[in-house]
Length: 635
Image (cartoon, rainbow, N blue to C red; front, side, top):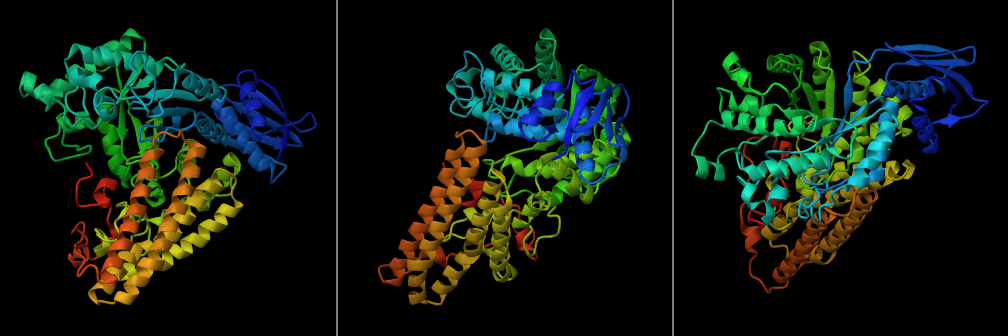
């Protein structure tokens, strides 16, 4: 570690300096390299010459970025002179804490420590119902909600590094977890959306806004409003008849903004529904440019709110530029929200993250968009841990201080900012889904690590997608992955060793399970009862044990980084899988030993789950768990 003696204009950053020393990111000593600190406006300057260092910075987070760069370069040379120009005014992650996994306070602090040396200055916690509202005991009940004190603690920690925490909530849609309780019966339009126009709705929204903002210094708040496709089509329709949803949206946004004005807040909303409601293409899901942004329409949209443009998959920089330019017709520059793809599978998709983030962030810089977010969603139970997003976060950080960014830069900066020599390994987890037969980059988000894990060994809803090339190559692929992740586990500090333990166990499991359904069906068709008996007595019990080892490894990782709430969902998934393996053992034995004359589930012809790509079946992006495990409803 490089030891420094830091002096000069450090009053606003000295708390953060002390914390970096405490967590082992920085060494301070009177005998260390003397580093003079000067605060002034302009670019970041970092230099070392004749044994003396110098850091010049503007904002506090620029100082911590500079310290990270100083440490990195001082480890390899005794002379350097660096200049960086900040490209963004707000840059950082949006952490989804609503999909069952609520990050421990200590884990968020760990993330903030990494962010500081990366030079990031923004953090949003996306909490649909996972924060405490006084006098609303069922809001976030048994969901691991944060207390006011926990959120205050996080804000106090972040401010040391010049990091602003902005609460991100929902005030229209995406509220199914709150609205399922009886207290919400009067304010519910449908299972997911609040009832616009109902006075009690706005009493409730005010309670949410007050509770969400109380812990934080920031006056900014993200009030959501995205993907409200069912707006006005539930109880609202019964009460008021059909009404143009653009008008309903404006009415609702206007009433919520009255609340934010009352408390002196600076709100932002997702912009997608305005594009959707004003699009001439009613089948367009996402940011059609065929929108009616006439003066008459735009004048009806509230203008004292920032708009957030979200796009997690577009690979075309010019398309981003056109949509950003369209946003400016609202009267302000948008905030851009990209995605670090850790959702929808058991493993991250860094191919798509790289292919979509580079052009999007280049477009931001070209269009003068000065605020960006790196979203990390956890759809369908947060099966992928938040910590695997760190290489993607480094990408957003480096784009914040450079025109162009390459992997060599990211690799070097990642090790300097995190202390982890794991950049290639964490990015390499994409290979769990980029199996043979999936195109490099995996733009269409094939997720075999998810559907091959959860699919039933007897029903085989995805077996048709594995037949042929997949059947011959998947076991070898996952066996190779298991060896690779074992080596990573052995060299990684906690909790990253837990991460690679999960992928080692998952790979061992998939090396067997990926093709076992096809093997069972083939032995059954050929009436090879003796081999079926061996399958039931040896192979399936061994698979059962592997699944349980995976469950335990996954549980260890979860409990080290998240609150315990939400793990029960994954316990139920693993438990269900093990129960079905046990049932398969018994069904096969009953047939092999003559107690059953036929196994109806193996008599059924296997069909493609989706028929769109019969020539490249492994490219399938399977839906959530409830569709993977059975063709029957789970409730």
